Amino acid sequence: MLVKLYDLPPWEPERKKMEAMGVRIQKALPPDRLQVVAWVKTHSGAYAAGEADCSFKSKGTTIFLAIKDGGIVGYACYDATAPDFFGPTRVVDSEQGKGIGKALLLACLYAMRDEGYGYAIIGAAGPTAFYEKCVGAIVIQGSTPGIYKDFLRLKESE
Image (cartoon, rainbow, N blue to C red):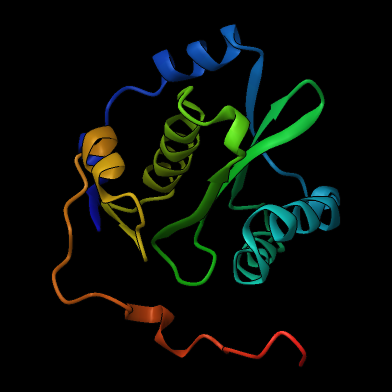
């Protein structure tokens, strides 16, 4: 999917909504790497953990966390597998439907815009209606599986 970063909905109302719910949206710090990657692997799987690991760069990170009651309840990455790509992302089941996913999405997209991108690509977008509704994303025809076609597919026993 493609998102126009110069035409995003406002971020501040979402940030305030999260704050009122006791959810803090923040960039992960380099010392958080091992804990965050382990959490992502548990909640999203090995592929997402590999992408999250790539979000810890030598100069800053490209992963936002949703923190509630001292624990991670969601995350979203950008510039992980490829530059200008949003994802992966996940909010734990018990916290879905509360706007946390949208807040994480907007945090990433605003960061991408601040870094000079004009558009963002959402690769392998699962809930396309969510992205259409939240940020006006449009489907890029013929883009599946896209950059993900060569992911290593090992058997569980290997």
